[in-house]
Length: 330
Image 1 (tube, helix red, strand yellow):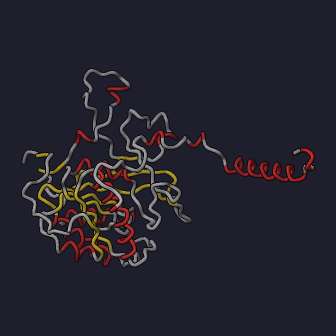
Image 2 (cartoon, one colour):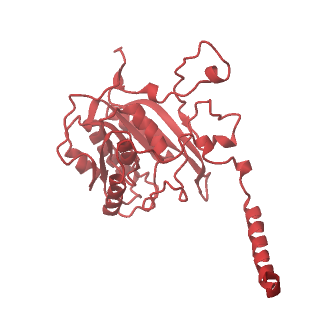
Image 3 (spheres, one colour):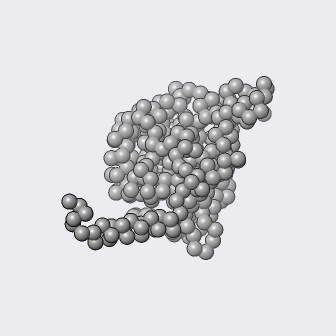
């Protein structure tokens, strides 16, 4: 077996992108756009494609027949494989419906799966006739299973041996995170404490400040940052074939990477470019670096009936004030 080689510096011999190709979102079909890129010109690809579950995009039909969807998925993933450098990495975000099928398609194309990560979140997407959707699959693929970029020192977390047991055998640098990433560990303080290694990143809900507003499917910057830090280096090229809200590109630029996006929708391209143009390398990431402190536990929240009672009491007080005679205010 070949010895595993971890790449920790930009690939010097990667084909240079033509002037004008990087640092922008290209409007049009992602397959056609990637076909114009040189082979081996991209270091990291993060893709959050349509899940084929009937989502209402402005231009794309998210209700393809299964055979068409899988054939199309294989075609765009084939281009991803071609444009990646030999030590490149491909992260795929996908829902339950086609997670297993796309993993198999990726393997057929030559990708090696390093991790099958589950990103779990509460306050999930409400469903009428099945359990509420509260997780997504994140596949960590590499082009070469024996040589790839993985900056493990940038994503280490304290271990239980260090912080709980005081074990002298503990690695002082900490350990790598688990492959289950949870949204609200503050609701499970005995299981998901700060010294443990389960990932926690909030879903970008409609009321969040981070929400772009024009695109319904948006990944949180803190989650993307962990992937970008681990799987690329400063100066590397990061490609998102389904740019959408442009969050991948924005996060990558903030972390000092070169960026390149594809987007079918003219509206999303225009809005995404506005967001991308407003950030530069070194800008702070959006979202709490320590999500445990970003929201109260459910038990510390306010019940809807209590809020309604408070609102009703406020209404009664206002009515009483209106009925008071003017002399009381003199």
